[in-house]
Length: 535
Image (cartoon, rainbow, N blue to C red; front, side, top):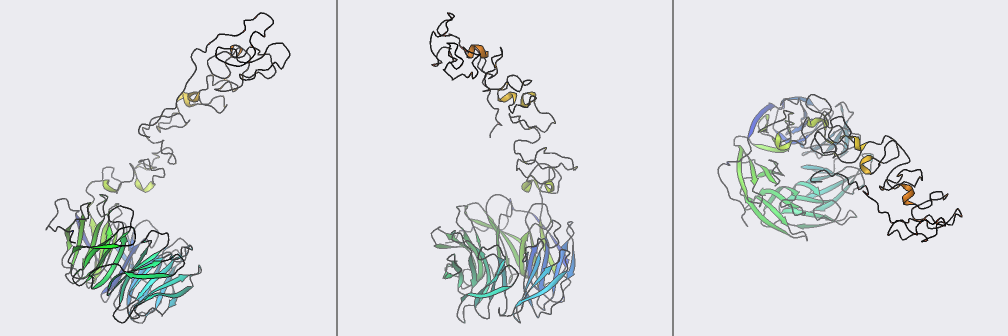
Protein backbone atom coordinates (compact mmCIF):
# COMPACT_ATOMS: atom_id res chain seq x y z
CA UNK A 1 0.00 0.00 0.00
CA UNK A 2 1.69 3.21 -1.16
CA UNK A 3 0.98 6.13 1.14
CA UNK A 4 3.63 8.54 -0.12
CA UNK A 5 3.02 11.52 -2.37
CA UNK A 6 6.42 12.80 -3.45
CA UNK A 7 7.10 16.37 -4.46
CA UNK A 8 10.42 17.95 -5.27
CA UNK A 9 10.29 20.59 -2.57
CA UNK A 10 8.17 21.64 0.37
CA UNK A 11 6.69 25.09 0.71
CA UNK A 12 6.55 24.62 4.48
CA UNK A 13 9.75 22.56 4.74
CA UNK A 14 12.07 22.78 7.69
CA UNK A 15 15.19 24.80 6.92
CA UNK A 16 18.62 23.40 7.72
CA UNK A 17 22.11 24.84 7.66
CA UNK A 18 24.93 22.32 7.21
CA UNK A 19 28.17 22.44 9.21
CA UNK A 20 31.25 20.23 8.91
CA UNK A 21 34.12 19.43 11.25
CA UNK A 22 37.08 17.11 10.98
CA UNK A 23 36.74 13.70 12.61
CA UNK A 24 40.50 13.48 13.08
CA UNK A 25 40.48 9.89 11.85
CA UNK A 26 42.70 8.19 9.31
CA UNK A 27 39.91 6.05 7.83
CA UNK A 28 36.16 6.06 7.28
CA UNK A 29 33.81 6.37 10.24
CA UNK A 30 31.34 3.49 10.47
CA UNK A 31 29.55 4.13 13.78
CA UNK A 32 28.09 7.11 15.61
CA UNK A 33 26.09 8.01 18.70
CA UNK A 34 24.99 11.23 20.39
CA UNK A 35 24.60 12.12 24.07
CA UNK A 36 25.83 14.43 26.81
CA UNK A 37 29.14 12.72 27.54
CA UNK A 38 30.58 15.47 29.78
CA UNK A 39 27.29 16.31 31.55
CA UNK A 40 27.44 20.00 30.66
CA UNK A 41 23.97 20.20 29.15
CA UNK A 42 24.78 19.93 25.45
CA UNK A 43 24.99 17.00 23.05
CA UNK A 44 28.38 15.45 22.34
CA UNK A 45 29.23 12.68 19.87
CA UNK A 46 31.23 9.47 19.67
CA UNK A 47 32.38 7.83 16.45
CA UNK A 48 34.28 4.68 15.55
CA UNK A 49 36.28 4.03 12.42
CA UNK A 50 36.82 1.20 9.97
CA UNK A 51 40.27 0.67 11.51
CA UNK A 52 39.24 0.76 15.16
CA UNK A 53 39.75 4.41 16.07
CA UNK A 54 37.42 5.66 18.82
CA UNK A 55 36.98 9.40 19.28
CA UNK A 56 34.48 11.46 21.26
CA UNK A 57 33.67 15.00 20.22
CA UNK A 58 33.00 17.69 22.80
CA UNK A 59 30.32 20.21 21.87
CA UNK A 60 31.35 23.77 22.71
CA UNK A 61 27.66 24.91 22.68
CA UNK A 62 28.47 27.25 19.79
CA UNK A 63 28.39 24.78 16.94
CA UNK A 64 31.99 23.59 17.24
CA UNK A 65 33.49 20.30 18.38
CA UNK A 66 36.85 19.36 19.86
CA UNK A 67 38.03 15.77 19.51
CA UNK A 68 39.28 13.44 22.27
CA UNK A 69 40.78 10.06 21.44
CA UNK A 70 39.51 7.17 23.56
CA UNK A 71 42.47 4.87 24.09
CA UNK A 72 43.44 1.79 26.02
CA UNK A 73 42.35 -0.84 23.50
CA UNK A 74 43.42 -1.86 20.03
CA UNK A 75 40.40 -2.78 17.95
CA UNK A 76 40.51 -3.73 14.26
CA UNK A 77 37.11 -2.10 13.65
CA UNK A 78 34.88 0.03 15.91
CA UNK A 79 31.66 -0.95 14.17
CA UNK A 80 29.29 -0.11 17.04
CA UNK A 81 29.53 2.81 19.49
CA UNK A 82 27.02 3.80 22.15
CA UNK A 83 26.70 6.33 24.97
CA UNK A 84 24.97 5.18 28.17
CA UNK A 85 25.29 5.33 31.96
CA UNK A 86 26.05 1.65 32.22
CA UNK A 87 27.04 1.68 35.92
CA UNK A 88 24.27 4.09 37.02
CA UNK A 89 26.69 6.51 38.69
CA UNK A 90 25.34 9.64 37.03
CA UNK A 91 27.84 10.07 34.20
CA UNK A 92 27.89 8.73 30.67
CA UNK A 93 30.04 5.73 29.81
CA UNK A 94 30.93 4.45 26.35
CA UNK A 95 30.23 1.06 24.78
CA UNK A 96 32.22 -0.13 21.77
CA UNK A 97 31.86 -3.28 19.68
CA UNK A 98 34.48 -4.69 17.32
CA UNK A 99 33.06 -5.87 14.02
CA UNK A 100 36.12 -7.93 13.09
CA UNK A 101 37.53 -9.73 16.13
CA UNK A 102 34.24 -9.76 18.06
CA UNK A 103 35.46 -7.93 21.17
CA UNK A 104 32.99 -5.93 23.21
CA UNK A 105 34.15 -3.29 25.73
CA UNK A 106 32.65 -0.65 27.92
CA UNK A 107 34.63 2.41 28.96
CA UNK A 108 33.94 3.61 32.49
CA UNK A 109 33.76 7.39 32.86
CA UNK A 110 35.27 8.65 36.13
CA UNK A 111 33.13 11.78 35.91
CA UNK A 112 35.90 13.84 34.33
CA UNK A 113 35.84 12.08 30.96
CA UNK A 114 38.77 9.84 31.79
CA UNK A 115 37.72 6.48 30.39
CA UNK A 116 38.89 3.08 31.62
CA UNK A 117 38.31 0.21 29.17
CA UNK A 118 36.67 -2.88 30.66
CA UNK A 119 36.43 -6.06 28.65
CA UNK A 120 32.99 -7.69 28.42
CA UNK A 121 33.15 -10.61 25.95
CA UNK A 122 34.38 -11.83 22.59
CA UNK A 123 31.38 -14.11 22.08
CA UNK A 124 29.44 -11.69 19.85
CA UNK A 125 31.06 -12.42 16.52
CA UNK A 126 31.38 -9.37 14.27
CA UNK A 127 29.45 -7.01 16.54
CA UNK A 128 27.32 -4.95 14.16
CA UNK A 129 25.03 -3.12 16.56
CA UNK A 130 24.48 -2.59 20.29
CA UNK A 131 21.39 -1.25 22.01
CA UNK A 132 21.54 -0.41 25.76
CA UNK A 133 18.23 -1.22 27.49
CA UNK A 134 17.02 -2.70 30.78
CA UNK A 135 15.57 -5.88 29.25
CA UNK A 136 14.39 -7.50 32.49
CA UNK A 137 13.36 -4.24 34.17
CA UNK A 138 15.49 -4.90 37.26
CA UNK A 139 16.95 -1.39 37.33
CA UNK A 140 20.27 -2.35 35.71
CA UNK A 141 21.12 -1.37 32.16
CA UNK A 142 21.63 -4.41 29.94
CA UNK A 143 22.57 -4.57 26.27
CA UNK A 144 21.14 -6.21 23.18
CA UNK A 145 23.79 -6.95 20.54
CA UNK A 146 23.62 -8.49 17.08
CA UNK A 147 26.08 -10.83 15.43
CA UNK A 148 25.76 -11.14 11.64
CA UNK A 149 28.45 -13.83 11.65
CA UNK A 150 26.53 -16.05 14.10
CA UNK A 151 23.14 -14.90 12.75
CA UNK A 152 22.18 -14.20 16.36
CA UNK A 153 20.65 -11.68 18.73
CA UNK A 154 22.28 -11.67 22.15
CA UNK A 155 21.06 -10.34 25.49
CA UNK A 156 23.90 -9.28 27.78
CA UNK A 157 22.31 -9.16 31.23
CA UNK A 158 23.84 -6.77 33.77
CA UNK A 159 23.91 -8.20 37.31
CA UNK A 160 24.20 -4.70 38.80
CA UNK A 161 27.98 -4.80 39.06
CA UNK A 162 28.55 -4.60 35.31
CA UNK A 163 29.16 -8.32 35.03
CA UNK A 164 27.23 -9.45 31.98
CA UNK A 165 25.63 -12.85 31.48
CA UNK A 166 25.58 -13.90 27.83
CA UNK A 167 22.28 -15.22 26.50
CA UNK A 168 21.37 -15.88 22.88
CA UNK A 169 17.69 -14.99 22.46
CA UNK A 170 17.48 -15.77 18.77
CA UNK A 171 19.61 -17.62 16.23
CA UNK A 172 18.85 -18.15 12.56
CA UNK A 173 20.31 -20.00 9.62
CA UNK A 174 23.17 -19.15 7.33
CA UNK A 175 21.00 -16.78 5.25
CA UNK A 176 19.55 -14.97 8.27
CA UNK A 177 22.17 -12.29 8.86
CA UNK A 178 21.14 -9.78 11.52
CA UNK A 179 22.15 -6.15 10.97
CA UNK A 180 20.65 -4.11 13.80
CA UNK A 181 18.48 -4.23 16.90
CA UNK A 182 16.40 -1.86 19.00
CA UNK A 183 14.11 -2.56 21.94
CA UNK A 184 10.76 -1.32 23.25
CA UNK A 185 7.50 -2.64 24.67
CA UNK A 186 6.20 -3.23 21.14
CA UNK A 187 3.07 -5.16 22.14
CA UNK A 188 2.19 -2.97 25.14
CA UNK A 189 2.17 -5.79 27.69
CA UNK A 190 4.61 -4.18 30.11
CA UNK A 191 7.86 -5.94 29.18
CA UNK A 192 10.70 -5.17 26.79
CA UNK A 193 10.59 -6.76 23.33
CA UNK A 194 13.34 -6.65 20.70
CA UNK A 195 13.14 -5.60 17.05
CA UNK A 196 15.85 -7.17 14.88
CA UNK A 197 16.57 -6.03 11.33
CA UNK A 198 17.66 -9.07 9.32
CA UNK A 199 17.92 -10.53 5.84
CA UNK A 200 14.31 -11.72 5.86
CA UNK A 201 12.84 -8.43 7.05
CA UNK A 202 11.90 -7.17 10.52
CA UNK A 203 11.86 -9.78 13.28
CA UNK A 204 9.87 -9.18 16.48
CA UNK A 205 11.21 -11.03 19.52
CA UNK A 206 8.24 -10.98 21.86
CA UNK A 207 9.20 -11.15 25.55
CA UNK A 208 6.75 -13.20 27.64
CA UNK A 209 7.76 -11.31 30.78
CA UNK A 210 10.10 -14.04 32.05
CA UNK A 211 12.94 -13.41 29.61
CA UNK A 212 11.75 -15.94 27.04
CA UNK A 213 11.26 -14.62 23.52
CA UNK A 214 8.96 -15.84 20.76
CA UNK A 215 10.07 -14.76 17.28
CA UNK A 216 8.09 -13.87 14.17
CA UNK A 217 8.70 -11.78 11.06
CA UNK A 218 6.29 -8.81 11.03
CA UNK A 219 7.24 -7.12 7.75
CA UNK A 220 5.95 -8.12 4.33
CA UNK A 221 8.01 -8.06 1.15
CA UNK A 222 11.29 -6.76 2.60
CA UNK A 223 14.27 -8.70 1.26
CA UNK A 224 16.79 -7.28 3.72
CA UNK A 225 16.20 -4.93 6.66
CA UNK A 226 19.05 -2.88 8.10
CA UNK A 227 17.28 -0.79 10.74
CA UNK A 228 13.94 -0.95 12.57
CA UNK A 229 12.61 1.38 15.26
CA UNK A 230 9.34 1.28 17.23
CA UNK A 231 7.25 4.48 17.32
CA UNK A 232 3.58 5.41 17.54
CA UNK A 233 3.14 6.82 14.05
CA UNK A 234 -0.60 7.48 14.29
CA UNK A 235 -0.90 8.60 17.91
CA UNK A 236 -3.36 5.80 18.63
CA UNK A 237 -1.42 4.34 21.57
CA UNK A 238 0.01 1.36 19.67
CA UNK A 239 3.68 1.12 18.74
CA UNK A 240 4.26 0.84 15.00
CA UNK A 241 7.63 0.23 13.32
CA UNK A 242 9.69 2.21 10.81
CA UNK A 243 12.24 0.17 8.86
CA UNK A 244 14.76 0.54 6.06
CA UNK A 245 16.64 -2.02 3.99
CA UNK A 246 17.12 -3.52 0.54
CA UNK A 247 14.99 -5.21 -2.10
CA UNK A 248 11.67 -4.29 -3.66
CA UNK A 249 10.44 -2.62 -0.47
CA UNK A 250 13.28 -0.61 1.03
CA UNK A 251 11.62 2.02 3.21
CA UNK A 252 8.41 1.15 5.03
CA UNK A 253 6.35 1.62 8.14
CA UNK A 254 4.52 -1.26 9.78
CA UNK A 255 1.13 -0.32 11.17
CA UNK A 256 0.12 -2.15 14.35
CA UNK A 257 -3.54 -3.00 14.91
CA UNK A 258 -2.91 -3.20 18.66
CA UNK A 259 -3.66 -6.94 18.60
CA UNK A 260 -0.30 -8.20 17.36
CA UNK A 261 -0.73 -7.85 13.59
CA UNK A 262 1.14 -5.42 11.35
CA UNK A 263 0.35 -4.00 7.91
CA UNK A 264 3.32 -2.95 5.76
CA UNK A 265 3.04 0.47 4.08
CA UNK A 266 5.60 1.74 1.58
CA UNK A 267 7.01 5.19 2.21
CA UNK A 268 9.42 5.42 -0.71
CA UNK A 269 12.00 3.48 -2.67
CA UNK A 270 15.37 4.55 -1.25
CA UNK A 271 18.68 2.99 -2.26
CA UNK A 272 20.06 1.35 0.88
CA UNK A 273 18.51 3.36 3.76
CA UNK A 274 20.92 2.27 6.47
CA UNK A 275 19.39 4.38 9.25
CA UNK A 276 15.74 5.36 9.64
CA UNK A 277 14.97 7.61 12.61
CA UNK A 278 11.34 8.55 13.35
CA UNK A 279 11.00 11.85 15.19
CA UNK A 280 8.71 14.88 15.20
CA UNK A 281 11.37 16.97 13.50
CA UNK A 282 9.31 20.16 13.25
CA UNK A 283 7.37 19.91 16.48
CA UNK A 284 3.99 19.90 14.74
CA UNK A 285 2.66 16.85 16.56
CA UNK A 286 3.22 14.11 13.97
CA UNK A 287 6.11 11.74 13.37
CA UNK A 288 8.48 12.54 10.51
CA UNK A 289 11.41 10.33 9.44
CA UNK A 290 15.07 11.04 8.75
CA UNK A 291 16.90 8.46 6.63
CA UNK A 292 20.18 8.11 4.79
CA UNK A 293 20.34 6.62 1.31
CA UNK A 294 23.95 5.59 1.64
CA UNK A 295 24.32 4.25 -1.91
CA UNK A 296 22.85 7.45 -3.34
CA UNK A 297 25.00 9.74 -1.14
CA UNK A 298 21.79 11.36 0.06
CA UNK A 299 20.07 12.21 3.34
CA UNK A 300 16.30 12.79 3.34
CA UNK A 301 13.64 14.19 5.61
CA UNK A 302 10.20 12.71 5.06
CA UNK A 303 7.59 15.07 6.44
CA UNK A 304 4.39 13.50 7.74
CA UNK A 305 1.18 15.31 6.79
CA UNK A 306 -0.51 13.99 9.94
CA UNK A 307 -2.26 11.20 8.08
CA UNK A 308 0.91 9.18 7.35
CA UNK A 309 1.31 10.68 3.91
CA UNK A 310 4.92 11.72 3.40
CA UNK A 311 6.73 14.30 1.31
CA UNK A 312 10.45 14.17 0.72
CA UNK A 313 12.96 16.90 1.45
CA UNK A 314 16.59 16.39 0.49
CA UNK A 315 19.13 17.51 3.10
CA UNK A 316 22.26 16.33 1.26
CA UNK A 317 23.22 14.67 -2.03
CA UNK A 318 27.02 14.41 -1.84
CA UNK A 319 27.50 12.59 1.48
CA UNK A 320 28.02 8.84 1.69
CA UNK A 321 26.40 8.45 5.11
CA UNK A 322 27.31 5.29 7.02
CA UNK A 323 25.79 6.33 10.35
CA UNK A 324 23.15 8.91 11.22
CA UNK A 325 21.71 10.35 14.42
CA UNK A 326 19.02 12.91 15.26
CA UNK A 327 19.68 15.13 18.29
CA UNK A 328 19.48 18.76 19.44
CA UNK A 329 23.12 19.55 18.66
CA UNK A 330 22.62 23.33 18.67
CA UNK A 331 20.71 23.38 21.95
CA UNK A 332 17.93 25.57 20.55
CA UNK A 333 15.20 23.04 21.22
CA UNK A 334 14.94 21.88 17.60
CA UNK A 335 16.03 18.51 16.21
CA UNK A 336 19.24 18.52 14.18
CA UNK A 337 20.80 15.73 12.10
CA UNK A 338 24.41 14.50 12.20
CA UNK A 339 26.10 12.09 9.81
CA UNK A 340 29.46 10.35 9.41
CA UNK A 341 30.70 8.12 6.62
CA UNK A 342 33.29 7.76 3.91
CA UNK A 343 34.40 11.37 4.17
CA UNK A 344 36.84 12.18 6.96
CA UNK A 345 34.56 14.99 8.11
CA UNK A 346 31.32 14.84 10.04
CA UNK A 347 28.40 16.88 8.80
CA UNK A 348 25.62 18.12 11.00
CA UNK A 349 22.52 19.85 9.76
CA UNK A 350 21.24 22.56 12.07
CA UNK A 351 17.51 23.12 11.93
CA UNK A 352 17.02 26.86 11.69
CA UNK A 353 15.23 28.41 14.61
CA UNK A 354 12.82 30.56 12.67
CA UNK A 355 12.09 32.88 15.58
CA UNK A 356 13.27 33.23 19.16
CA UNK A 357 10.96 35.92 20.52
CA UNK A 358 12.26 35.88 24.09
CA UNK A 359 15.89 35.56 22.93
CA UNK A 360 16.74 32.76 25.32
CA UNK A 361 18.42 30.63 22.67
CA UNK A 362 15.39 28.35 22.35
CA UNK A 363 13.20 28.58 19.27
CA UNK A 364 9.60 29.66 19.73
CA UNK A 365 8.42 26.28 18.46
CA UNK A 366 10.34 24.52 21.25
CA UNK A 367 10.02 27.11 24.01
CA UNK A 368 8.80 25.40 27.16
CA UNK A 369 8.23 28.65 29.03
CA UNK A 370 8.44 32.44 28.89
CA UNK A 371 11.88 33.55 30.08
CA UNK A 372 15.12 31.59 30.34
CA UNK A 373 14.28 27.97 29.52
CA UNK A 374 17.53 26.85 31.12
CA UNK A 375 16.14 27.82 34.55
CA UNK A 376 13.32 25.30 34.13
CA UNK A 377 9.57 25.34 34.64
CA UNK A 378 8.92 22.74 37.33
CA UNK A 379 5.19 23.43 37.64
CA UNK A 380 4.68 23.64 33.85
CA UNK A 381 2.66 26.84 34.09
CA UNK A 382 4.38 28.36 31.05
CA UNK A 383 6.68 30.70 33.00
CA UNK A 384 10.35 29.91 33.53
CA UNK A 385 11.76 30.18 37.04
CA UNK A 386 14.07 33.04 35.94
CA UNK A 387 13.95 35.73 33.33
CA UNK A 388 16.70 36.29 30.79
CA UNK A 389 18.56 38.54 33.22
CA UNK A 390 18.68 35.82 35.86
CA UNK A 391 16.13 37.44 38.17
CA UNK A 392 13.36 35.36 39.72
CA UNK A 393 10.34 35.41 37.44
CA UNK A 394 7.99 32.69 38.66
CA UNK A 395 7.75 33.48 42.37
CA UNK A 396 6.60 29.93 43.14
CA UNK A 397 7.76 27.43 40.54
CA UNK A 398 6.17 24.60 42.50
CA UNK A 399 2.65 25.98 42.05
CA UNK A 400 0.97 26.22 38.67
CA UNK A 401 -1.48 28.84 39.98
CA UNK A 402 1.32 31.29 40.81
CA UNK A 403 3.00 33.09 37.94
CA UNK A 404 3.34 36.69 36.69
CA UNK A 405 -0.13 38.13 36.09
CA UNK A 406 -2.05 35.14 37.43
CA UNK A 407 -5.50 35.82 38.93
CA UNK A 408 -5.59 35.74 42.72
CA UNK A 409 -7.43 32.83 44.28
CA UNK A 410 -8.26 32.22 47.92
CA UNK A 411 -5.13 30.26 48.91
CA UNK A 412 -3.02 32.71 50.93
CA UNK A 413 -0.39 32.90 48.18
CA UNK A 414 0.89 35.66 45.96
CA UNK A 415 -0.59 34.18 42.81
CA UNK A 416 0.15 37.17 40.59
CA UNK A 417 3.83 37.28 41.64
CA UNK A 418 3.55 41.03 42.34
CA UNK A 419 4.89 40.75 45.89
CA UNK A 420 1.49 41.34 47.50
CA UNK A 421 -0.89 38.89 49.14
CA UNK A 422 -4.46 40.31 49.00
CA UNK A 423 -5.86 41.45 52.33
CA UNK A 424 -8.73 38.99 52.20
CA UNK A 425 -6.21 36.13 51.94
CA UNK A 426 -4.53 36.99 55.22
CA UNK A 427 -4.88 35.18 58.54
CA UNK A 428 -3.75 37.85 60.98
CA UNK A 429 -5.24 36.09 64.02
CA UNK A 430 -3.66 32.74 63.08
CA UNK A 431 -6.90 30.83 63.59
CA UNK A 432 -6.28 28.79 60.43
CA UNK A 433 -8.97 30.47 58.36
CA UNK A 434 -8.56 33.20 55.75
CA UNK A 435 -10.92 36.15 55.44
CA UNK A 436 -11.88 34.92 51.97
CA UNK A 437 -12.72 31.54 53.49
CA UNK A 438 -15.26 33.06 55.86
CA UNK A 439 -13.38 34.51 58.84
CA UNK A 440 -15.57 37.52 59.69
CA UNK A 441 -13.12 38.95 62.28
CA UNK A 442 -9.45 38.41 61.49
CA UNK A 443 -8.40 40.12 64.73
CA UNK A 444 -9.91 37.48 67.04
CA UNK A 445 -8.72 33.86 66.91
CA UNK A 446 -11.99 32.68 68.58
CA UNK A 447 -14.11 34.01 65.72
CA UNK A 448 -14.25 32.10 62.46
CA UNK A 449 -16.78 30.41 60.21
CA UNK A 450 -18.12 27.41 62.15
CA UNK A 451 -16.48 28.29 65.50
CA UNK A 452 -18.18 27.31 68.81
CA UNK A 453 -20.62 29.94 70.16
CA UNK A 454 -19.07 32.38 72.61
CA UNK A 455 -22.23 33.92 74.23
CA UNK A 456 -20.49 37.25 74.61
CA UNK A 457 -22.63 39.38 72.35
CA UNK A 458 -20.53 38.50 69.31
CA UNK A 459 -21.04 36.36 66.23
CA UNK A 460 -18.33 33.77 66.97
CA UNK A 461 -19.37 31.30 64.25
CA UNK A 462 -19.59 33.97 61.54
CA UNK A 463 -23.07 32.98 60.41
CA UNK A 464 -24.34 36.55 60.52
CA UNK A 465 -26.33 36.09 63.75
CA UNK A 466 -25.29 37.14 67.30
CA UNK A 467 -24.61 34.06 69.42
CA UNK A 468 -27.33 34.89 72.02
CA UNK A 469 -29.87 34.83 69.22
CA UNK A 470 -28.40 31.60 67.92
CA UNK A 471 -28.81 29.99 71.35
CA UNK A 472 -31.66 30.63 73.79
CA UNK A 473 -29.55 29.55 76.78
CA UNK A 474 -26.06 30.96 76.39
CA UNK A 475 -25.25 30.39 80.08
CA UNK A 476 -25.39 26.62 79.54
CA UNK A 477 -21.87 25.23 80.19
CA UNK A 478 -21.98 23.44 76.84
CA UNK A 479 -23.86 25.74 74.51
CA UNK A 480 -24.02 24.56 70.95
CA UNK A 481 -26.39 25.21 68.13
CA UNK A 482 -27.51 21.60 68.04
CA UNK A 483 -27.63 20.69 71.76
CA UNK A 484 -31.34 20.58 72.75
CA UNK A 485 -30.83 19.64 76.41
CA UNK A 486 -31.03 21.63 79.63
CA UNK A 487 -27.66 20.80 81.17
CA UNK A 488 -27.53 23.68 83.66
CA UNK A 489 -30.93 23.07 85.27
CA UNK A 490 -32.42 26.45 84.40
CA UNK A 491 -35.55 24.93 82.94
CA UNK A 492 -34.58 26.21 79.52
CA UNK A 493 -32.98 24.21 76.77
CA UNK A 494 -30.21 25.64 74.67
CA UNK A 495 -31.61 24.49 71.32
CA UNK A 496 -31.56 26.75 68.35
CA UNK A 497 -34.99 28.45 68.73
CA UNK A 498 -34.99 30.27 65.45
CA UNK A 499 -37.74 29.43 63.00
CA UNK A 500 -37.09 26.11 61.38
CA UNK A 501 -34.36 25.14 63.89
CA UNK A 502 -36.21 22.00 64.84
CA UNK A 503 -34.30 21.80 68.11
CA UNK A 504 -35.24 22.41 71.71
CA UNK A 505 -38.30 22.46 73.85
CA UNK A 506 -40.94 25.07 73.02
CA UNK A 507 -42.15 27.39 75.79
CA UNK A 508 -39.64 26.04 78.32
CA UNK A 509 -38.41 29.46 79.43
CA UNK A 510 -40.18 30.06 82.79
CA UNK A 511 -39.66 33.79 82.62
CA UNK A 512 -42.35 34.03 79.99
CA UNK A 513 -40.05 34.24 77.04
CA UNK A 514 -42.00 33.32 73.90
CA UNK A 515 -41.87 29.65 73.06
CA UNK A 516 -39.68 30.17 70.00
CA UNK A 517 -37.54 32.97 68.63
CA UNK A 518 -38.77 33.73 65.15
CA UNK A 519 -35.46 35.23 64.16
CA UNK A 520 -34.08 34.65 60.74
CA UNK A 521 -30.42 35.15 59.96
CA UNK A 522 -29.93 38.24 57.90
CA UNK A 523 -26.93 38.07 55.64
CA UNK A 524 -25.45 34.61 56.09
CA UNK A 525 -21.88 35.05 54.93
CA UNK A 526 -21.25 32.94 51.88
CA UNK A 527 -17.75 33.13 50.54
CA UNK A 528 -16.85 31.24 47.45
CA UNK A 529 -13.35 30.63 46.27
CA UNK A 530 -12.35 32.55 43.23
CA UNK A 531 -11.18 30.26 40.49
CA UNK A 532 -8.51 30.81 37.88
CA UNK A 533 -10.17 31.19 34.46
CA UNK A 534 -9.99 27.99 32.48
CA UNK A 535 -8.89 25.90 35.45
